[in-house]
Length: 387
Image (cartoon, rainbow, N blue to C red; front, side, top):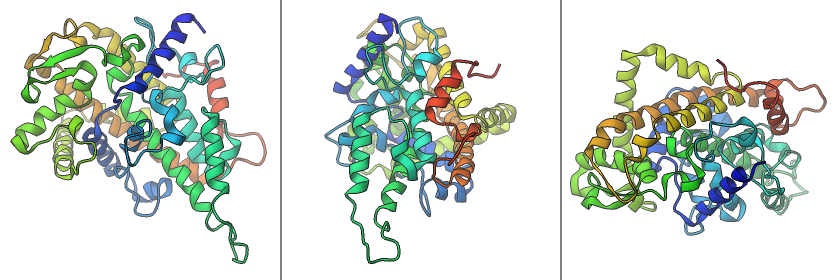
């Protein structure tokens, strides 16, 4: 691995001192609701639980690397902050080998959005045999085993594992939420950006269209500020910015965001149904091809538009001209991720019906049963993106 890539990993890890989100909580929640509207409820229930709700914990992965969050799991998921990104050295295109490698040249773990989705897909499909799969974090594997093994056994009952099986079910649900969240994230250009400036967090800006012209940064402008602008127009002074409301009940704001998103989807489907159908098809088959297509596509968009995305020098003012250029692009990226995610999760549900949560007893495995290590190996021998 080149020294540049090692530096990029170290730079990504330095994000742990920053409040890191993908799309912000309202965007994640509305996007998940849109995704579920395209899915069969039986598939959602299989992946999650009876009466499953993808939106219920879709923002939960953002809490896992923040010890201050009540609902987070920093002991088990503290390593996962870089899993929201697949960043690269300046000017470099998406690189499959780098994205799938889980260790750097020195043997240190190197999580990112792509290799983390590969890992959590495997954990979801083989959740009953979670201790047999390859983990990115050895510490998390140790803690998962401890969580499972310290759950009480009831030997006098017909099923002595009754209280342990739900722990494995939890691992499946956590894994599905993780895949879904990271997949949403990598449709944001600043989650496939340059590690050197922490995906735009270091590019601070004065935001003229934000509440009270607040100080922000170009990453947060994409995560939340552009969407906050529309929601503030709806709610006026009653509205609380997403970055100011992590433990605040945002149901009415999220309902409105979903309504806006749904209307934009309906208009897009009517205007260009072929585009929407293409998004569906892109993620209805091979998992790795889907996620790498997204990573490559988003990285290319970032590189091709880098100058205008950053909108001038650090600490300069970003105004409504930026909204005119990029707000609808941001909405379309959330919609695109929702459509693709529905196809990806539907395919995962189909695979889960085949695995029943267990590793195959004997070889050979077909593509749907391939482990994360096999998926990473396969990527080295063929292009991950369909032309």
